[in-house]
Image (cartoon, rainbow, N blue to C red):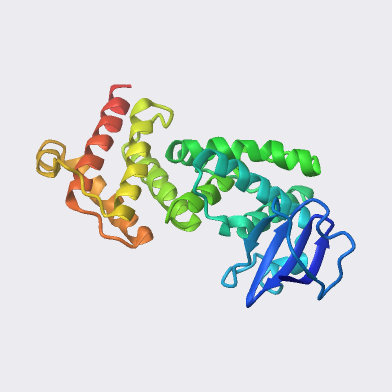
Length: 277
């Protein structure tokens, strides 16, 4: 049996089951209920465990005390889309995702829209997650008639990625930032134009994506070309070492030398293409 802790709206209840606080979403589930009522949930209801360790964006309050329940419904629909795509999705993103959307809309209403310089990189790193996140634009518009931009879509992409992998949102964002800023620095230092929409750049980002997966699954590359790239492309190898050192810090794992070798090869392709142009 569940006990009502708070009626959020007709479709959303904060309830207690044993020692756990649970958000329950179902059409009309809040209608006619009162705090402390005991009830059974219908089979079609969606249940989401409250994350006790989540730090709300408004640090002075609990998310459940300030967030409009419609954002919980929006987040639940996005999770549903993600589940249709990936099957196994960690539903713990409900509160962080709803909180993020809440503040996104708040910033839009205040005409404050921070840009995301890593949108293209995130799209290359996580194309399947980005595809789901694009649907969030339609979901948000259908609920509250507000349209988010593609920079916000990329932020939602990271939430979805964190729900299907062991990577935290911050780590994924940092990985994208490190790659992006490394390329920008090379562009500035060498006074050249690097095409981030090139096939070589897309291959680099794809390599970074699978590098992260390999680190999380303790999988090793079958071939080690580090000696070859170190001797053949010393400058690219040096840049790859720097990038891997920075990635290691944000991912909290040491990168094997074999990863440096392949990363150097991708960087060499990008640099060679830029020099030719």
